[in-house]
Length: 172
Image 1 (cartoon, helix red, strand yellow):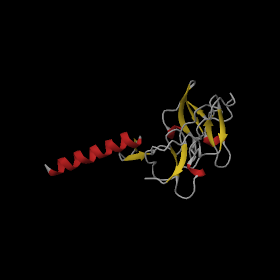
Image 2 (cartoon, rainbow, N blue to C red):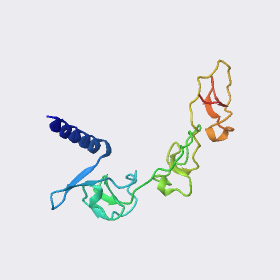
Image 3 (cartoon, rainbow, N blue to C red):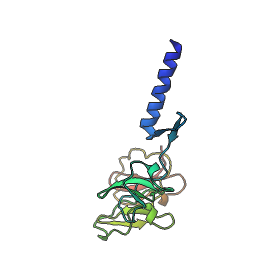
Image 4 (tube, rainbow, N blue to C red):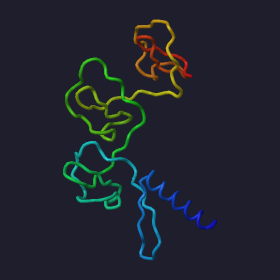
């Protein structure tokens, strides 16, 4: 009976890994199972390259590091996109330029990220996000924008909401 439960537990753990990590299994000719992990990166937001292969079902159907991604034209193999660290800045009042200068972070040079500007997307320097979280604002009415992101605050301080603005303060 104990063997039965350990087999059931192993099956549940394997199924959990499959669901959680999107792992696929392939049966080899010798009857053994091989774990197939998804390739690194993610599918780009827009199809802006000629696909290397059409009609894929999973990443393994694609050559090299390409991923199987679904667009209006169906499932195709394309180079992966990668998300760079940092956070896109908050949009200021008004709209940005109404053009698509990038489709994901991979299109941007250096540390820049592909950010929505209110109308289109463009490469923008990301904001720094420091550890910790902001405390609830005190009753002091500070109605000015002393900072826009954590990177503008000294040391470990974060850019936190005040009663009606933002200011640097010590994190919780």
